[in-house]
Image 1 (cartoon, protein in one colour):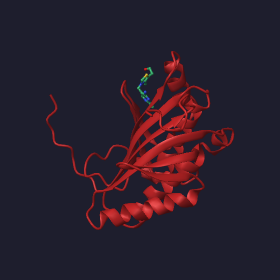
Image 2 (image 1 turned 90 degrees about the vertical axis):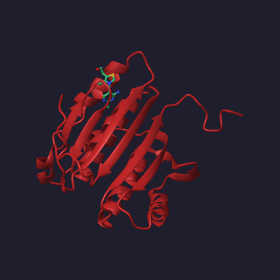
Image 3 (image 1 turned 180 degrees about the vertical axis):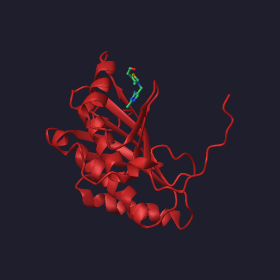
Length: 204
Ligand SMILES: Cc1ncc(C[n+]2csc(CCO)c2C)c(N)n1
């Protein structure tokens, strides 16, 4: 058994653990086609039976996760994406070498072909101390500048609109936290596309 403590790292590598859940018998094809067709060469990546983890510069972590989800959603199936983004976690340093990649995004062309409405939510957790509620409120205001519907729900903020704009807002919020010198930031999201459910409350 490996009881070695995880070594501490002070690197500013960003990471995301996420899973895509396609609600179809063809779920294996939907997931594997996304993982194959999206260019992931500027991030460290590991896929298991439970999830995928990508690590690298913020721009590439968002480019890859956005492209993977929108590629899966583009099949037309009802697809859900569940993720945890993190930066500044005092823990492993896997993939630090990917921080030296340049800023050119690799999936811009692929994303241009896709137009997808989504519904989702995000929660922001500034873990580095400070006035955390103000930091969260400020970033919810930031999200409203991205051309999507932003509304309050319990424990999270709901987001409705174009998928690319939703991911661009999430990236902006995450990047803002880094620029504001938050020492450790975690952001969770759940994003759904092509749901057969109507947007209205379905329990009434
Ligand atoms: C992004 C993402 N990565 C891994 C899984 C886990 N998973 C479930 S089915 C399947 C394909 C067959 O092995 C895989 C890898 C997921 N759901 N989403």
